Image (cartoon, rainbow, N blue to C red; front, top):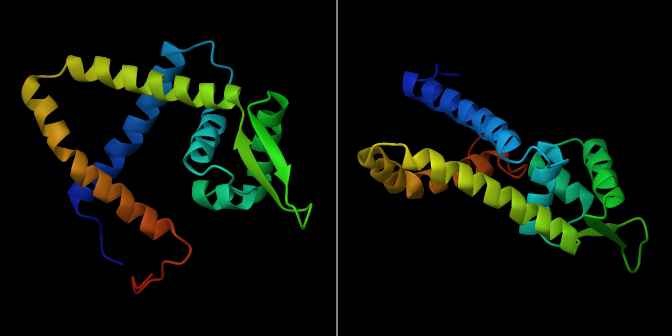
Length: 159
C-alpha cells in the first residue's frame, strides 16, 4: 500500500471538516429539528431509493443492519416511514417515506442549500467560480468513491 500524496490527505481532511461544519451549521440553522443526522441521511437515502428494503439501505449507508432497524423503528414511530410487508414473504419488507418523511427530507435539503448559499455568498467571486467549475469533478469523485464502497467491487477494480 502506497503512502497518500499530501493532496489526497488534504482532500480527505477537508471533506471530513466540511461534513462536520455542515452538521454544526445545520443544527444552528434548524435547532428545532428533532432528527439525528443518521436519521436524516437514512430518509434521504430512502428518498433516492423508494421502496428499498432495510438491508439495501444498510448496504447503501454502510451501516450494520441492526443500526438501520433501530433508525427505521424511530422513524416509523414519528410516522416518517412506512413498512410494507412483501407479498409472498412477510419477512421481507420495503420502506417508503410518508408525506411527513418527504417534508423532512425537503427541509434537510433546503437547510443545507441555504447554508451553502450563505457561505458561498461570503467568498470571493473567483473562489465561487472555482467551486462551481469543480462540480463535475466532485460528482465524478463521488461516483468513484461509491464504486469503491460497492460490495461487488474487487481489488483488481474489475467490479
